[in-house]
Image (cartoon, rainbow, N blue to C red):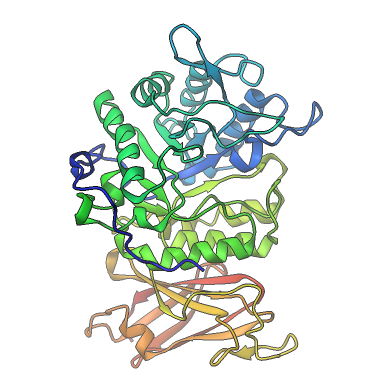
Length: 450
């Protein structure tokens, strides 16, 4: 179980770590698509599979995001993850794309994506992302794919990808030559500095898999995640609901270090039907609910062309997207419950009946809370028990939200029912009935007059 601690580096103060990424991006988390769990490098599904012609698939995905209305909601990043790089030119050392997967090349791919409006008449264009690794090799190393990393070519590779049109760069950590606390920061700083030198506004997403990218560490001159990137991975890949449960636990430990300009990244929205997945539809919806509340990047990594109506409804929840993109940028904090477990028999043996969650045999439930702009608040409830449960935000829970004493009533809106469900008066308390086995509910609280 991941628990937060500051790990002291073994190196002295490192001047580059005191720098920053002044690109003006990341006022709110990024939204869009990542090809990793859809058409990533290791997922060779044969000539009859949807990813065999990767370029055409990415074009179809882009058009779907526009035609479905997802881009209008803010899902504007089309990020091509590992698998596009073939190798390096033997003479120049420059990146060479895989023309079998992308016959037009990566610049043409980016030009094609970025010529599209997010919706008709918007005047806003779609965005394009590319990927590499800070190590000597990339993550996929099997019969289907292998490629070199960017170690020793940091500036040249950043320049190449930005010249290809990338306005989002994800740099992974596979094959790294240094996984220490300070060493990792120092290596990622090379990409940050190279991006700064381009003069372009490029979202920098570093994928280092550790919670310790979030907090400052004065002992090595590190001022926190936002000094390196616009988002930083805090855990390993979330392939199943137990994995994503641990991602939530890690998010709880580092949430206070988030804010406009830089966000911890608890992983992609993996959905129920991916090569590496093992979630139910309800768990996929729970992930989206909590990632919206945190807030964290909403990057859909699934074959959206095969979606069910339920999936489209999940990721098209305009009210939850608004919570994720709330301009105040105040991070949610876990205010009831400890680190979640899954599977969890914390339902009191209710046999499918609704159970009151108090002294569960394991940690099955959480309540998260967050301040929003306009004097509003959001609450999220998670239930990992085996059956439905009543989970309460009591007086102490509401006190943690620091609601002004001048607020005498709160209107409660269910963000999945899209309906006002209650008006609370002081002393505030609210109980949500939440389905089990990885389910989440979310509510918006607005000050109201009696």
